[in-house]
Image 1 (cartoon, rainbow, N blue to C red):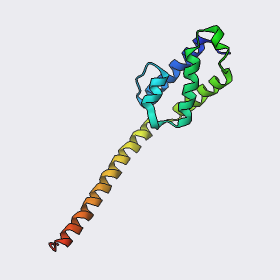
Image 2: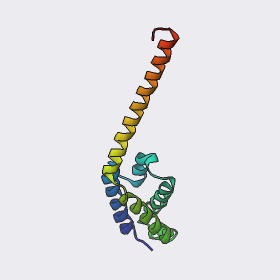
Image 3: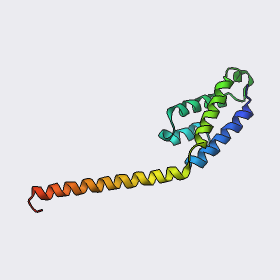
Image 4: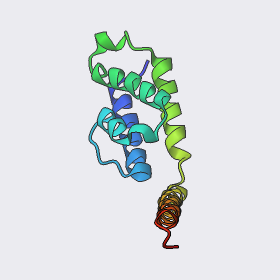
Length: 124
């Protein structure tokens, strides 16, 4: 069984990782996961809910008995493994390539529409 202090330490560690990898500045794990949003898989959000429930009752010994310690430990492990595997530099490059791809697609589409318009009006 985990204690409230152990859960607090783990949550602080996860918040530091979220701040480092996603740039999220949140005081609670629930708010951090909400700000991360779709960038993290749904299973991580469900694991964060498990941790949040344990964190709420973490300092009450009688309620802490109701918390499944193995599930909380597993949830911490999964979230930590996911956050540790994120490459910030690669995410930045991917974001730049996404923007360049959408801009180039829009330019190609605009050029094609312009050519069709000019052909239609028999200017070109």
